[in-house]
Image 1: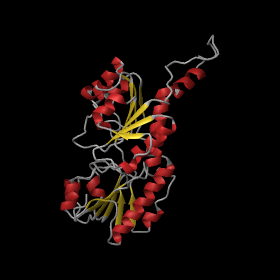
Image 2: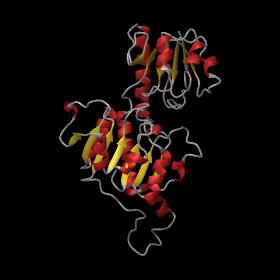
Image 3: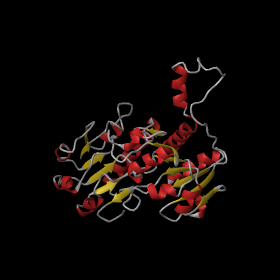
Image 4: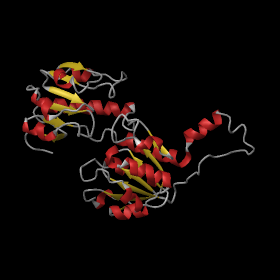
Length: 325
């Protein structure tokens, strides 16, 4: 079996090993693949792995040997799933590998909004403390989380992990999702509610839902108007959940007190993205998933996905000729 990895660098910049995957066939690893190179590099391959390299219907049509696509991520919007099913191509993703890492990063973003640790460290190193007439100073309002309300939109594995961490900080937790949330997933202090009520009550809103056409741009001028004055907004899910110009306007007016995102609508971020010039805005380069421990889990599960396909019992299937989605 010929196996091709189209964009292996972000998953493995050199601190992990592809050896287990290479045991399953003739393996070729590309660090990065441009759109014009994708079809050519997939020629002759039965199994292809991609992280963010798009595999469209047109590309699949140029690769008649292709039978398996492994997505080196949980989100699968970079693969045309309908086209894969039509062409009898199994597509498997890697769910839940980054739950702990993304939840931890979510709270890191929130704590940075509360305390601006990086900015205060910079100020000290630049001499502001040394010149201060008092024994201490702060450049932003400092926020205590205990007693505040965390609103979590999307209550899958990551949303649940964030809820537990928020409770550990003494926060009240409201959750909602596009699917009915079973009562079994709600412990004491975690309450499910409708989205409109969450907007009204939450001091902090954190996004953990997958992107769909229904929720694209769900954080916009209209929804922000329903939120508390000075609300904090966090997004470690998908950038297109937010209308970025509307968020910039809300940050400038003070309606949104601060925002922190690990994702933007087009990545890498473009110079024209309005959030780059928004006040009280933290942007990180899509790294919540990237601790070595999480990437190792991702690699291990990807290997097991291909093994299962070879054995005739594919797992973590998001699209297949049997129509499992």
